[in-house]
Amino acid sequence: MTSQKPLRIVIVDDELLARQRLEDLLRDEDNVEIVGQAHNGEAAVRAIRELEPDLVFLDVQMPGKTGLEVVREIGPDDMPATIFVTAYDRYALKAFDVAAVDYLVKPFDDERFEQAFRRARRMIELEKVDRLSSELRALLGIGARPVSGSATNSAAPSSAYIERIAVEMRGQTRVVQVKQVDYIVASGPYAELYVGEKRYIIRERMQSLEERLDPARFFRIHRSTIVRLDLIETLLRNPGGDYAVLLRGGIKLKVSRNRFEELEARMGLSG
Image 1 (cartoon, rainbow, N blue to C red):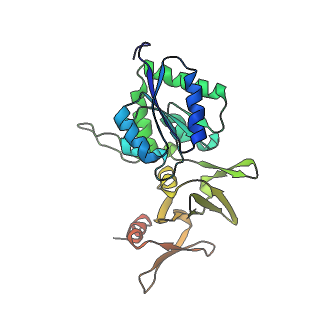
Image 2: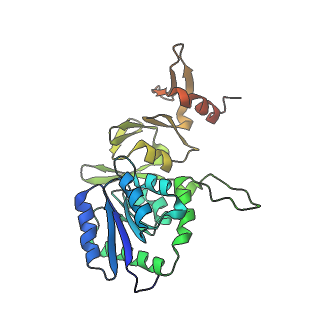
Image 3: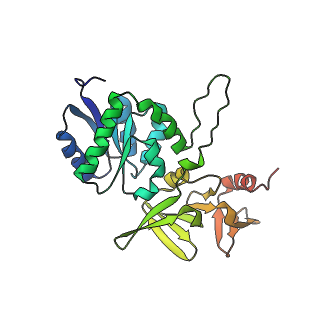
């Protein structure tokens, strides 16, 4: 990419004010063309495929399809350079830090935007974006493309999974260690984290959480429930065809019928 060619950019965020802020900041940059905007994940996929931008500002948390789901649908190898935009605390962004050109934590100031944008422009001009595709695959838990004569490992390294989750409480940010989370329950657009006797609420979809949690430690037993595997004490198969798990401490959680056999296998109880 030469300096004469405008940097083609797509902005993706479900919040109008957030899109407008990025647009205003980009208007002050030289040799930039905002070729499209999208307010949800489905529109983002269409815009990226049709417009083929050089750079995408991609919101992580959106209704319908999250930013990570957008990357998964496009495919890591076909994603342009990406700057994630998110409300996550920096401690919860270890995976994003290696998989994206950069990330912006809302609310961000002009200086932080400038730093991320300059880094993105530099990487695009030096044609170093391709190296990010492997990190994006790791973030999504997608194996690398098969190479002739070599085996493909579809499991993401443990470093690709989050170890901390940032929780907003009374104007403060608390960092919850993932290893302390007992189970997670969906509550509309939110998720409830249960840590012992405490409950924390975050704005996050179950699909996104499932992708970001280590599958060796967590399992989605129901469309609305994720549980830490080492807490499961008993698998319950009731006469009426209902399934459940009993956790240490006496908590009983429903298991979907189509997930029970896989759970048995994960617990080493099948075959």
